[in-house]
Length: 332
Image 1 (cartoon, rainbow, N blue to C red):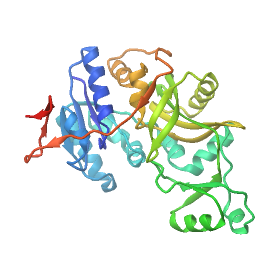
Image 2 (image 1 turned 120 degrees about the horizontal axis):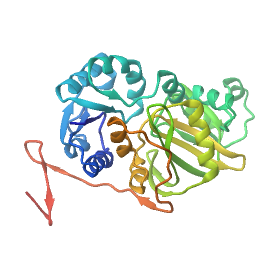
Image 3 (image 1 turned 45 degrees about the vertical axis):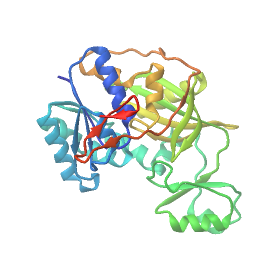
């Protein structure tokens, strides 16, 4: 049995289904287990097994719950999905793996520390010659006389929460008071891309899929088109070779007048990852193959010029909090 545990399942119904599809296509026996702190997380009801766990903020209790699930359900792989659990999991990876038979799909602590802190990301990118928008110092902002627009966001933020375009000095002053540990950068203009990269457990790039971000909602892609942009792919490959993460990585960048400028690196499955998976760069299948000892090679066996349009869907739970299925307009 190859059982996979998806943490912080939330709304990740697409990702749950992608793992199911890869499992079934490969003829693998195993369950997809979804865990969340809320019984109202929709993805729980699409998994084979669901588990309620403590909040990530509870630290040791959260880690202990993961260990118990792994042991009780014979989990082979633990997959994080949100930013706020990444550092905790990287710090406790050895504890989880030594206490269970599971492998945690998490990059090293140094990689997570670079990606989760925007100043660390900025310093890393500048050190290795990658383009990023210039970050303004507090002294520059206090002095005034700045050129607008600018862009402000939290030091360790995600999902575009408290991230704003700043049009004037009054807005800058307001946002600096509103946001905890803000960073302010020059505003970028150009075409925005998300790049889904999959790396094996030795940090070798296996697949790399750029897509144009046509529209977003709450920081997550809502409409996108798959493209094989060689310039972006070559630059992101160099980035991955230096950073050396593992698993599915989501890179956000923009093509501007200066070239390819980077926005952030998310060392996890991004919300739009199913787009790349459905196009043929199947990170879920890759993970199953790695777990059964296969060696993977770099490939570009995915379709380009595909456009994906994401949408909401509802499910109905009965009085016992059990999912009821819709069939031909009726429920049973």
